[in-house]
Image 1 (cartoon, one colour):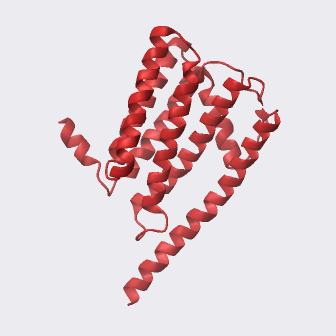
Image 2 (cartoon, rainbow, N blue to C red):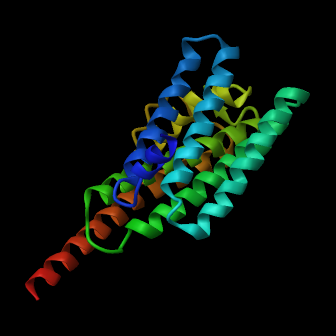
Image 3 (tube, rainbow, N blue to C red):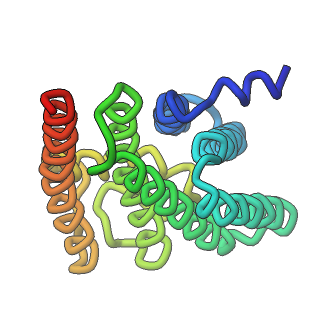
Length: 227
């Protein structure tokens, strides 16, 4: 039964499952506001592990990255268990760093598969959405690491366990990425401001790159038909 479900994820629909997993992770982070902290910590970590696994299954067609990302997940799970058993909160920085590298590797793998390569299809369009979600997630994790190192870097997000701040960090990240800038959460220190405006720049350029990639792929497809 499990083997059949895994086989359902193929190169024609893999980005759909990956995008759903990323959206589920973001939604699960909001549970921190309505459910007791202890439960949310384990729930969010469980959702994170599930997201990792879906990402791995979706990217198993890219062998060069699959082995590397699998190793990262294994190390992340060991770090999570060590933090729970030993109660060392500093391990969270290691966990966040591993999450960042994992999502960055996932981003590179997807980008290599969909941008300026082949013809456009539904899977590639959904993959471009996954890339955007990954950008926001990576910056959210970067903000969480920044807060752990420099607690007063961002006004509106207090230093604390990553699962308690993940929702706010993701909110601030996507608000910055889309250049909305509501102003309820603000970067305070110079390095936090650098992180914020770099994310805004990347968000604008991402839109331009994705549009040009889709237009280029569409143009190549039409030329192929005309020939």
